[in-house]
Length: 155
Image 1 (cartoon, one colour):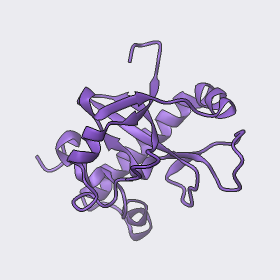
Image 2 (cartoon, rainbow, N blue to C red):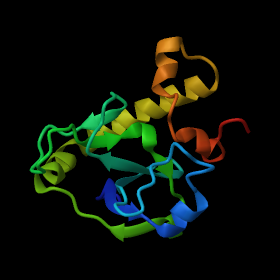
Image 3 (cartoon, helix red, strand yellow):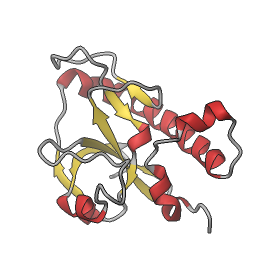
């Protein structure tokens, strides 16, 4: 990712799913027949893959306001299912999204990254045991718990 591009759209590779299998990493989204598209963003020393989802029912996300996809559900970028893919071998094919979502993503990418940074900051507090019960609910099913080494938690 160069300085001009804040993000890239891809799928995760088969190698990623082989390493992070469903039995050991149940919170990571696994759909072999229809893999999730992800937005890759670099934050500090980590490359995060944020999955695009078509049925988001929580607020730890960015919800698209505009979409051409025929769906009654809420589409968006799910922060709670973000994974870290610092090795290029975990990044698969280039992905394309709905044109209206693409335009919105380009217009809102700085805001989305800022919102995700806030989510990560909250996770650090949660991991340190400094969250109240309401805040802790936000991180109960997060995939960030599998990436403490990369996040520098517990070192």
